[in-house]
Image (cartoon, rainbow, N blue to C red; front, side):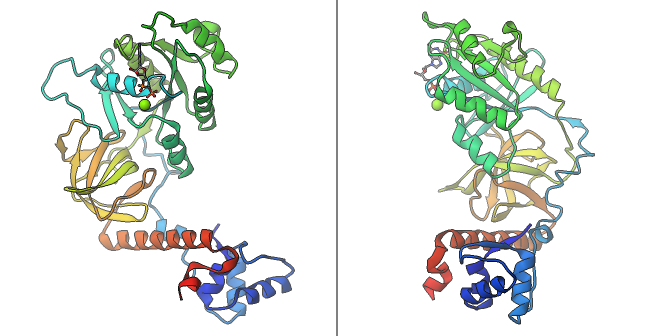
Length: 371
Ligand code: GDP
Ligand code: MG
């Protein structure tokens, strides 16, 4: 439910916060100026102070933007989205780079993938596509989760065979478990003379990660990012895990997705890498993400090609935002610019309010300090 900080409520009515608190006290509730009260209580107070209340609920503005609940039309299979995690120096970046080039060998032109924050590869055995989020590390994963964005279907946990389970390995395991995302263990650096893959498997047991050879259900693959050993097998295991997850989507609806990263590019203006999750994103679509809006001017694939559209599980660079959104912001296509403006101005307002509320405290709100 909606809620408001007492100081902010007072500001909006141009009343004194103490008067709000006094009224609340009359109703039997003791509050500090920094307390947050629910919208119904706030409305009551406002009316008692003689104000007319026009409530704009998030649900009014955001209505129909994401029908996460209505997934009855999700009937088409989609590729899995994978995040690579693990301890520093265990080879996350090396593995992501090696996988990126893993099936470039198979001929055809181009093949020079550019870093846009995510990329797709095809498993050579099954021909199935897999999307990798190209920002290894827990910060990105946690930030996305904190924003309620769920992009990852599978976590690949990288553990160096010469180093074993380390603090960030454990952190990654906890992240994956908390997010209820299945894990595949890539035991990396098996080319090293002091590699002890068996020790890694045993150590993982302490954290309730039980690989198949030790009687569990977690798949592990011994790899060398350096020598590109067993990468095809890793891809195939990911594809298999994805089959089990039975991931479904609907490519025919207006696009929904998540911003993986965004920046202000000198030449191109605001550029956002978006992972499309449902529907199809097309040139000309009117889009909102966080407090930013725009019209899709160009879409650029992970191969650096200009494309007309991007479907589910496909990462694309999106040009046409008025300003760069933030990583983790959810993207939606809306019917027209007026709607986009309504949504983004509401969100911008909320954002300012939250920022003000968090710095206000007892000294009063930002507005008061400035006036
Ligand atoms: P990250 O911190 O997890 O991203 O690790 P990096 O990919 O940066 O790798 C850390 C170091 O390990 C680098 O010096 C890599 O060259 C090296 N490295 C990564 N994978 C392998 C591997 O499979 N074998 C060997 N011998 N070295 C590797
Ligand atoms: Mg790295």
